[in-house]
Amino acid sequence: MVFFLFQIMPGDPVLLMMGQRTDPAARKAVEQEYGFDQPLPVQYLYYLNDLSPISFYQEAVLEEVQGWSPFTVFGVGLVLKSPDLRTSIQTNQDVSKIISDRFWGTFILAITAMTFAVFVGIPIGVWISNQSGSWLDRFFLTTTVFGISAPSYVMGALAAYFLAFRWHDVTGLDPFGYLIDIDGATGEPVVIWHHLVLPALTLGIRPLAVIVQLTRSSMLDALSQDYVRTARAKGLPERVVIFKHALRNALNPVITAISGWVASLLAGAFFIEYIFAWKGLGSEMIHAILTLDLPVIMGVTLFVGVVLVTVNIFVDLLYAWVDPRIRISGK
Image (cartoon, rainbow, N blue to C red):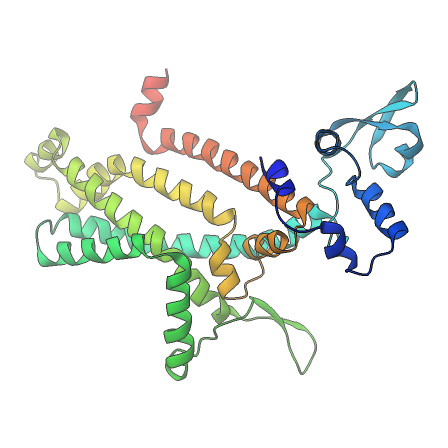
């Protein structure tokens, strides 16, 4: 779908690559190199052929393909290779390298944001589940609704304005910056941890709000079950009842939410990275869309799909560890 939607986007990728003053010969060479002179279905088949680990290429270009060709038939060679995501139209850089370079920025940002959301959200959810109906319960429910509803770009803009501009003397935070920068005096790369605070905090607000609400509702349901009443009737300490019996059985929907958010954040926190000038997959994807860089758009999209599938498989395995009833039902 992304491949075909790209074709109806306004703009000419050849002009974006070479500028408005492109002579016909140079334009034709670029179109042939990237396959823009072929019909759309043919372009799509060429892309799938590059992507597939089992591919077919003309004998004349086999030497340019990085892979192993066991045989050639009628001038066409079978090639076994790693998936080829092609090269960026704008930078002529390998898309796989772009993704591997930018992924770590998104990975660090996403893991930091989710760590903040999990280790703050679950305790708050457990706490207010034992304060059901109180003013604290109503306060946190109202706050979390706001956290879920507010768009990420709005929260990012507010955080940058107040914490980085208005209160910079107190917080010491900067509105823009990446985790790694170059020291002006030595020329060596240095890690600037405080650049991570604002984007991670802003990115973690929405999953934090979701985790608080889910933990609260799941705990309220678990605390009303017979096994909890039995545990209390046996005289077990309240701490043991909550954390050993109720919480473990209430974690399934929370884990589902966490897994979904981890996959989503790893896929690229588009607006947050863009607002805070953070070098990750999200900012790279926005730049690729603005410049009609199809190979980068396709590469990031496919990588996101792999991340989503992998995280979902991991979560299914994690369910069985958290809830023994799933292992029993599986048998």
